[in-house]
Length: 640
Ligand code: 0RA
Image (cartoon, rainbow, N blue to C red; front, side, top):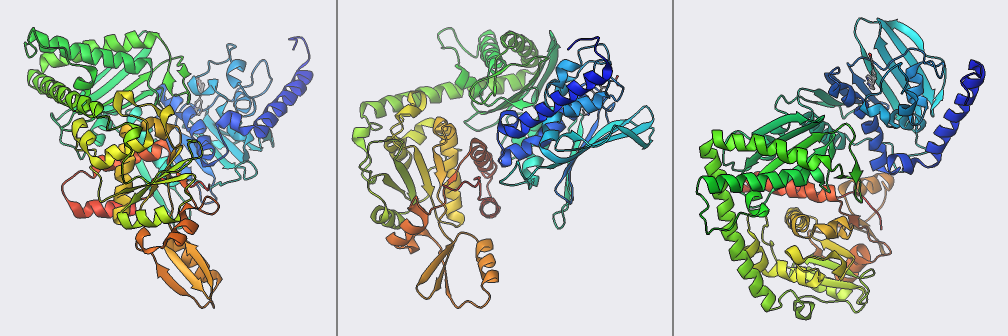
């Protein structure tokens, strides 16, 4: 558009563009927020919160509040500078209006009027606005309180001054549009809370809170960590036995990239490692992770050689050795992060590998030299791990010779299906021999295979690799799946594309399910990431009305039915376990693809199970049981 055209013309054309932009968002919301499921709904909150976080990172906002209002709308409040309200040369409109009504607002602000901070490069605010029935932005700035309201992204009135104030900040309130979020517009407090706590860990010094104002659910949690990710490591290690008190903490900047690392060792065998780039959890790793790993391995080996913990003839410690028992958080902040990979959670910037390696190595080397006692503990742990690794390799070689994990060696307990088409085949892992028997009788032989698992499977938390491999139940699971184990693991060899955990709806069932999910999370992760893992949902009650049988999966369902049928005459059976159902009932209620209710296990569900498992490894049994009972649902609803 020409610079010389009059403002009115300009404005008209701008407005048309705006409307077209918002229409595009409403037509294809998934393109902008990933999905319109519960996940997409919560994404709206993060789009708004991210902008306030950017204002905190810029050094201005110190407090952020997220509120679920009584009417299910969301309010995000920050005490930053307030979004600029001045009229922009190129649009003739207040900057804040453009932020909320124009896609790619970033590009519009390249002029000298103001420089865009991180969050506003994105299209976040306008996208949320387009997908909200109502949105109100309130800005405190220049002694005034400014406000503008929108409906489905469209401006209701010009920005107006509604009062005065001697502070600054931005408040955004919005209601998600039920016409877009068809599944649900109900926000999940604990889901928001988890990420908000994480944001507090990742942005040290920031005060951030989440509050529920819905009737009967009123609650509030506030977070503030002076220690940042160092506090995060301490939190993750809360129920573990640590090898030294204070986590190592390194925080430096180079070439505009901030690198922050906290790490601590525990008596465990496995590594707990989370990495972030610009507050985004980089599930798939990337250059920051590989720089850190390379640095860790090299610095520990150099130190061990120099101090003669490793002699001339000794092999170097491997990366796995030096990470055994380590809990570490790596968080980098980059001015232009590049996210790659299937889920866009892999950091791609190639400069970051060297920067992270150098900054971490320098800091960590200094730490080891200054803390020789801790350094020795870390090196000893690595040497022990190397010894265990060598023993495990011997055990693995033995198992390979005997071909125990080959398909030709299918476990005797497995009742396999007759089809060879993995996409159609399902493997039910069933708790107990009696339920296993009913499942074998009731199943569809063509596509459903049954693997009964007896008692508690080995708890992978405490067990090292060689013990895991020698466990009968675990071996039969890997053998049946056909994927191999460890470095030979290959998800494309999976013989079933549904791995269905079918346990009793009681405490022990929940425990076995948690154990299985932990095992899968740690040793079969690609199967999880492929979306192959499910939990069966056996009924809790049978209501018998004459010859009619109705099954209910929860107390809530039963209560709802009883309320709807106050005069019904019926008999009620509460199933204590799968074993109490005969094969027909098990098929009808839990296995038949036509009416069963499977729940797909997500990566986050399994990760949570894994963390719960770590937490539950304390010594007392009773609180552990109670916890499992209360938190036995690590699954998102998905009817299949
Ligand atoms: C750019 C410039 C200025 C403020 C902001 C962005 C800003 C954006 C958001 C989004 C949510 N909360 C926010 N707070 C501030 C101000 C520039 C100046 O005052 O000179």
